[in-house]
Image (cartoon, rainbow, N blue to C red; front, side):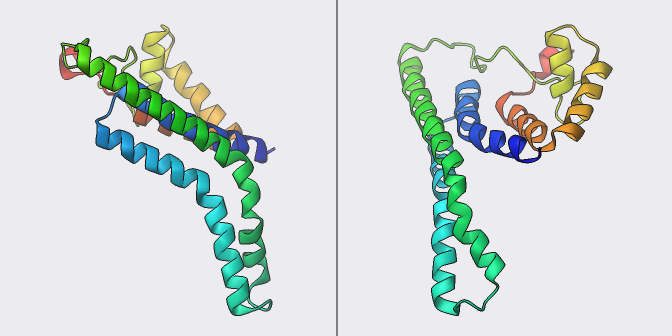
Amino acid sequence: MIYSPLLLTLLLIGPALASIAFLRSPSIRGHLLLLSVCIFYGIFPLLLTWGGLSLTERFGPSWHRDIVTGMFFAHWLAIFTIPSAILGAIGLLLSLILKNQRSRTNANISGRPTTFFYRSRRHKVVAGLCSAISQRWKLSILGVRIVTVILAIAVPGLVLSLYVWGWLAFPLESSIEAH
């Protein structure tokens, strides 16, 4: 039961990084940083496996067999991380291309991000996501917070990763809109 949220989280990290780039519209440096994080995320299990094999050769079979075995079999995580990283890299490259096309046409004259969803500045407890969801779909703030806590207890990895993703992806509303 705990593995399915973990595997779903592993599959969603790359696309989540790409969606952050689409929603936040970072600079070229920010795009390159997200792209390098995405590439490192994709090859990390293979690097971990390589490190485990190197430790096995160096210290022999008597040195903490469980740790080395865990590192050796970490390459199975690549089944989930490599496709996620590929999707994330494709999304980041598309976001970079669209950013360059938008900068040529100067479509966004106001200077504000082109997102339609802003985290609340006034009613936030942690990041303002629950209040933003309740304002967007006209729900009770308390109800959204209770459902979020229940889901965080039931499916901890998935809800926590989605919450952190929302925190990074959606900007705070401007102080003018908050009043």
